Each structure stands twice: as structure tokens, then as C-alpha cells.
Length: 130
Image 1: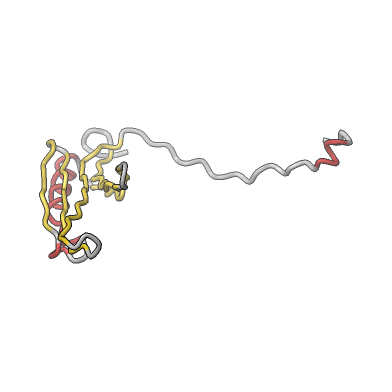
Image 2 (image 1 turned 90 degrees about the vertical axis):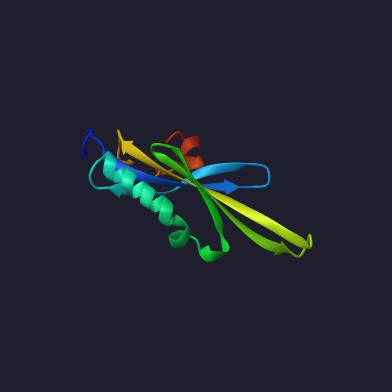
């Protein structure tokens, strides 16, 4: 690991997946930042400001709110109005993105996958040859 405080710095981008009855956050991207905390904070703020035009197809169709939730995190709310043929009225769709700065403090490589052991046949087990 490297960096000013002994760990690597990242900008994390999480997106909310909303379903009819529940919602959940998932990590959409993790961007390694060379340098330390200050460089990561600058990159996160830059990403927050540029996100609407760089990551939304048809960004002109979206309105957005950008909140600085803490010194190290931002919450973006995007809204788009559309006409619902079913309800015969305008409807608004909203989505959320959370951008935060994080320091990697521990890691472990994923162990390689091993092929499963060969299965013993029922006849071999019955005859006691295992």
C-alpha cells in the first residue's frame, strides 16, 4: 500500500437500484487516485460536478441536485419528467448516485478456484472401494 497515511485512496461511486418495494445501493465503480486524501477529495468533487453530463445519456433531459453530505461524500439526485401514456399525465423518475472518498486499509487476494473433487460412483461406494 502507498499514500500519505499508509493506505491507497479511492473514489467510490455507488448507485441506488430502486424496485417497487425496496431499494439497495451497489458499488458501480472504484477509482484509484494517485496521491493522498487531498487528491482523492479533489477528484471526487470534480466527478460529482461532471457526473450529469459525463454519465447520463441525454443529460439535457435531467435535472439534478448535488448535496455534500459530509467532507468526503456527495449525494446526487437526478430527475427526469416524462409523459405516461398509461396514466395520461406527466410523471417524474428519480435516481441517486453516492460519491465518496475512501482509504483502503486492508486487502486480501481472492483465492483461485479449484476444480471439485471427482465424485465416487454409487457402485464403488456400495462395494466399499472408496
